[in-house]
Image (cartoon, rainbow, N blue to C red; front, side, top):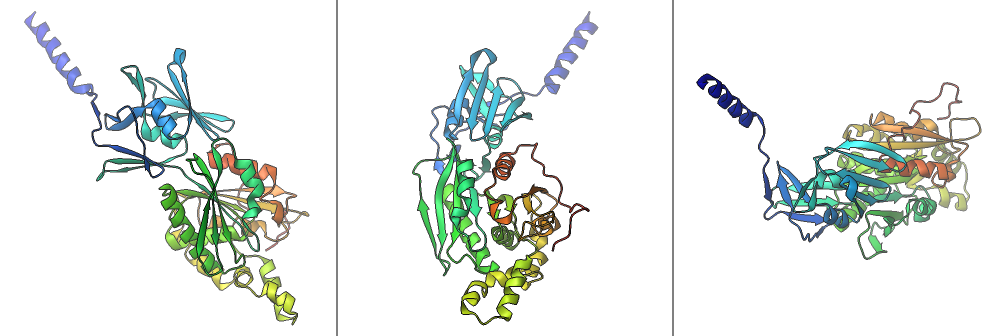
Length: 405
């Protein structure tokens, strides 16, 4: 009998030592900052096994999400923009809907205490498309939106993306700021809304829409600094058309990708365009002042195939961080490999900078219509939301295509 009792006692000790003890305590002194502003929560932020939790309704609402509680399933649902997250008490998986696609993700399990459902702050916020940072020194949890920034191309303006902004706008997403860069580089801003927007849209307009790549890179840096301070954000997504994609690429290689989370290029001549060479050729053999005023610009020289500016950007391609996701769209018309201005090869040239890239062609869509095409915009919107079904069709030229540099 004594031997049997001894074995039982040893077994109990083994179980106590093997099964981890869950630790739960209020996170005294921990601050939650959402979009640069302190978020006042009625309930406590709680640390459980090293993970920060908050009452589900309060954290969802602090992020600007709509909240639903399904009692019979013990399930909390938060929705923002094109994302919807469903979490269930005690379950280490959650349902995440991105557009029309629903997937299962792993999270730290929510739990119930004093009739309050607590959810893991980082898992919930990142699933809904927010950036999360922890500052150990100040014991602050920073949760920030990831703004979408639109950058136009050569001789265009912020109006280039009128259709895109209309397509992206909904109850959670709207244009919040317009940034204008004067020809001398002076930045001016127009704030269009007073409250928080969970998915802010921002336009950058160059008044000198044919400035050099160097100037545009500097101006993108300056604009990104402003956006970061305005939203407390370290990450932002860029949607670009034509030369705007080159300007943001210049920003990336000059700053090692500072601020850039994802990059969309629509017909961007990353490797240049024959249009630049043609413009310079026209300038060489004409004395017409009207033509000179149009083509004698830094932009046309920089866009020329093999230009010094393009070679400089390419030489720094090692500074293009692998974490930046790229989605490049190319137009293709008249049975060629060009959108009429930019070749497919040039539009997909960021494959020489990063492996983290998806490419897609828009058949029978010209250069000036890429940023207006409904199908293209639908793909871009879904890709930014993280829809796994938007993967592109490859970045290599089809062998049957007529080559066009």
